[in-house]
Image 1 (cartoon, rainbow, N blue to C red):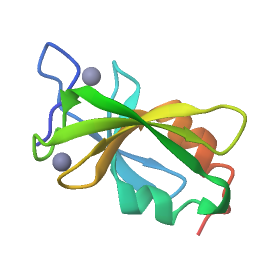
Image 2: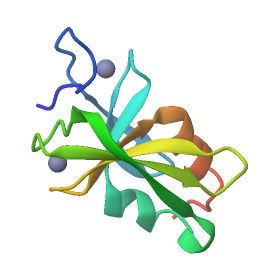
Image 3: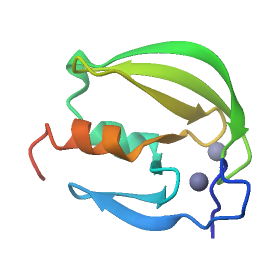
Length: 107
Ligand SMILES: [Zn+2]
Ligand SMILES: [Zn+2]
């Protein structure tokens, strides 16, 4: 089981699916852990822009690797994604996952 890297009280991540894309979310934080390839495979990447913001304060809930923060912009509503340097999983707001994946056709 993986635990939320942010919550101070140990909170298990719960299996969660958005538009056919599976990950795990922390309910209190409203954030989602997901494999980077899973997320980007479901997105049309042609107009996604990513800008590195620097090292994050939290660790990957899977491998305890370092997270780096990236600003991700596809729509007019950019968000901050945290990406593990070791296992290439990402941590991001559930709202952003939904907003981005629901722009894409299901399949
Ligand atoms: Zn949490
Ligand atoms: Zn990791």
